Image 1 (tube, helix red, strand yellow):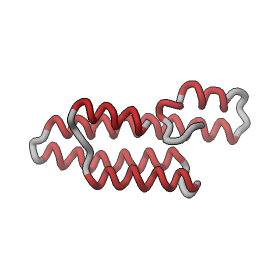
Image 2 (cartoon, helix red, strand yellow; image 1 turned 135 degrees about the vertical axis):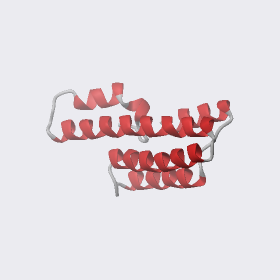
Image 3 (cartoon, one colour; image 1 turned 45 degrees about the vertical axis):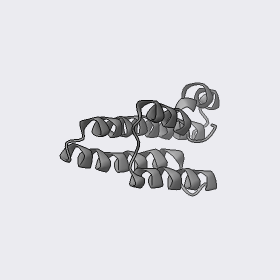
Image 4 (cartoon, one colour; image 1 turned 180 degrees about the vertical axis):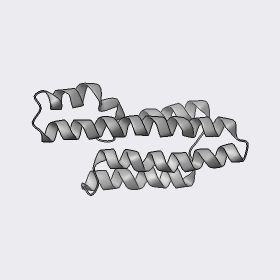
Length: 112
């Protein structure tokens, strides 16, 4: 999910705050090391983007606030989806691995 989002932000000529950038980087490292599950990384990022969004709106920067609002929504959606897939895989639900690869890969910070 990181690469397509970065490309979109570049095209739109908007960015994310240093705090959000640090959060994304830290979460990617923790997911890669296996210290936090992917759904938790998305939930953490949603919280960071939500804080940035509020600050942007308070400063009157509506465009930046909308970008951060999308970050909140994408990460909440991805977090819920990854949590559901983790639960399905843990329960041995047939085809859960296939669903993870086909449906949720765009929201993934790592290959399922």
